[in-house]
Length: 377
Image (cartoon, rainbow, N blue to C red; front, side, top):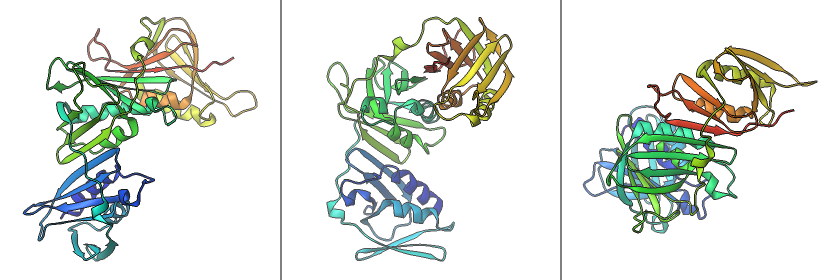
């Protein structure tokens, strides 16, 4: 097989392997060439997440083996370019590429669990747009596993609109995008582990679609936490169990009106935040002072290191002084896909909302990022 295609397929599949497998066999990656097949199928499964991919091969013989998955990924990633050859000899698997030769000891294939099937297909979404939405939203999900609901990305399927949402209680990110449902009247949702979803969309095929499959629910749709969700893109398929929890009623968090707004070029503001934040740690406030035509960024005070920088903005409203955690500020700005962003404010101590700038006046933004300011004296 081709080394580059094999390495990409192995690396993608390896993302589903657990860091701390409950049983040793779950650290394995299953490799199989079916009878008469011209593809090598790779799969990983830990009872929560499954991943399957394929790569075209010139096969001399059908068969299946189970090998240490992460070790395989490291080996293949470091093989020289060209062709890779795999053959088996009893309990050993030989992998060769160029002048390099590796021998791996197989794991007991009979102990490996059967991968789950795909749930029922409910529609498709453009791969590039979906991957962008997931990358924009998932940084806002919590990393604290004590509250599983906050570690998820909420997928809200309503008609031909798909909303991807995540929150850690201090900020919330929402991306709305178009998708093509099987049933135009669909109204259902799924709470997916954010880290798993982020890994799933890495390496999607540009210009293609992602097929979405969801476990069938009752008459009212899928109940929270019921069943699994699946994604298929080209020769890659993945499934994951849903988080068994209700998601927050996030729509009411967003203010209906704002007292002031700044329109600012994203790149210059992002670079300024990076520089000023050099003297601040994660929990030290980075202050923004808005006046007509300008925003001044400040960090540090008193006997500490200090930084100040001013950049031009289009600001409407009374002068405003507001402070944010630098990493929260960066996450919001880096998720804006347009060249400029709208920064909307009500009061210095109440949530601010960052959005992209719609192409047409009056259109709703596709991405919204609500963030709670820090209180400063």
